[in-house]
Amino acid sequence: MAQAQRLAGPATYEESALTTGFDGEAPSAAPDEAETIFARANPNSPALKAAGMLGLRFSDFAGGVVKSDVFSQLEPGKRDYEHIVPVPPSTGLLWRMLKEAAENILDFADRADHDPASARFVDLLAKQGAFQDFAAAWRQRDLSHQLPASPLERGEYWDLAAGPNAAHLMMGRLNPKLTYKFFDSSPYVIEYLNETKRMLASAAGAAAPIEIVRADVRQLARPPTPIAVLRSKNVWSYVQNFAGPLERMTQWLAPGGVLLLQTDKSLGQKINLIDKLGPVVERLLASGWTLNFDAGRHERDLETLTLTRPTASAPDPASLARWRRYADDAKQKYDEALRRYRGY
Image (cartoon, rainbow, N blue to C red; front, side):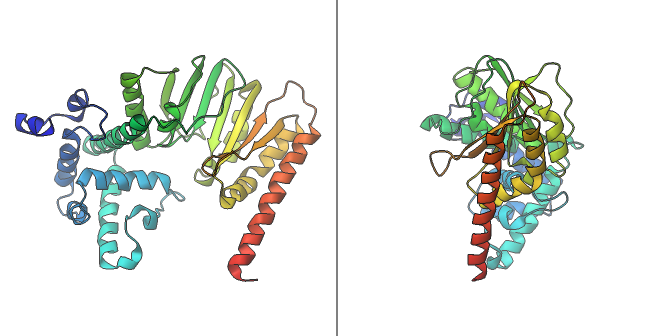
């Protein structure tokens, strides 16, 4: 079918996506169009040659670079090219060429808010990535990624700085009585999630109302009605000055609503949570919020701190004790790991 489309002339991603099944192959127009757009705007870039050397379609290489950048963001203005470039620095000349290629791709993608060609380029990479990832998950019916349930039956469920991984959560079990809002500031992530939402509706129909919102999670406005759930998965590690806005948003939760703070099973992430959000947690517990901790049953499960907004303001001693045990245990294990690393 792909060959017939090429013989018939170039189609847009959107036209070909309507006739392509979820077989793991992205609609054929997307790679050609993304490559054409980039080459026209960056005629001297080594990026096309770099993709060929790796045996990759250009759009797969470029999409991997942009997606890796989303997952490896450092402080503003800095990028972790050791995680973005798909070979180690020890490869010398190859790594330097691929780093230059990645820099060209990301510089072009960064202009998406101001340059229509760049915006279309990012849209295509996001849609193709979402299509391939959705197809694989849909074939396997992989429902291992689930959002924690809401204790309230109605209201909004906010996922802050959701990232591409929210696509898997959208495929999970959702409460049809809730509205799920996934927030992110990246144009790539927003298009990736919107494409997943479109494909999910096409394949199975939406399990619940879903909204994809592009926004800085530090500048969200108070909603007209209270929120049921605020979820934050390691956001404090890569969004600067997040603690203040998050504490403000906790006051938007309905009584009985919950703040979910989630991390991987990583001591580094837990220590970062304690350092960045510890004072916020302490203040919430002092004002009567309750806390529970779930380490998950499996290694791949996330660890979850659940803070519930009270109907009364009396502090809960048991919740404060759980927090202190959580923080003390994480710090002790981190110190032990550091001593082993240093050899004493």
